[in-house]
Image (cartoon, rainbow, N blue to C red; front, side):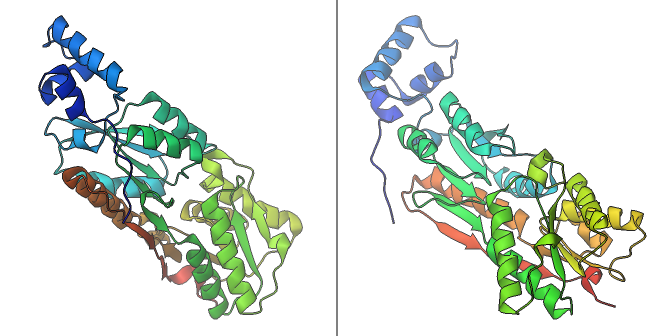
Length: 339
């Protein structure tokens, strides 16, 4: 259990100004139903106490509508939309307005710093965004409740994803299915999840004494969504074609890459799994209909769990910190059944 230093709250502002908490809230939200004299009293109290308008968890304990921000590198890719579904379904019972803030996938850390500088949210969920020291200081000064999904930090509630184990499971599965010349399609832009998946994959090869052929670790040219796209997977297959040499099976960094790879292999007259094995990562809905083996990292469940934790923080104003790492599971389908 950890606790943070107490900051100035809306209660202290109300007490200093000699008004109700609801009046302070109306002033902060620029309500027209407050006299100028009252506005002046509240604003004077805010200045004297150095109170931050983005408020603390105690403001969220009131029954007035508040703002939840979900910061995400992209909300158009299947992985993020599945996590967002979990958040959305869980939030229905709460009186919270939602804004989705797209930080951008190329530099989400810089995007989240800019977001917190605005001070527009009362509570935050971040998805796949690392908390830098700058962001940590911003959060300490604002004292807003926050839950991290897909990343970790010792001072915050988080539900991280065990990407290293997922990469290991993919490699282990391919090897046990009888494949020995293995390749991987990596994203064009290095990210923490892709790096950890690659490291786990390499660990499996080393553990089972499978030679690592670096030429089979390729990328596409596309940098959209950091290279986790159908285009990137499609382009990467033609890198193998240029070599005139293909691995026996390919581990794709995510399912959308695998979908693009599947299409490219078909264009080249190669069949999965007759000519080459293919495994993805995420277990998005489409993989079931492609009969694609994949790694399920429980995206929807993680979204639900993260939102439940944030709701508990808002309702109880607890200082207890919950930190968990979610282990993925293998979903074996026909695309890795060696003929």
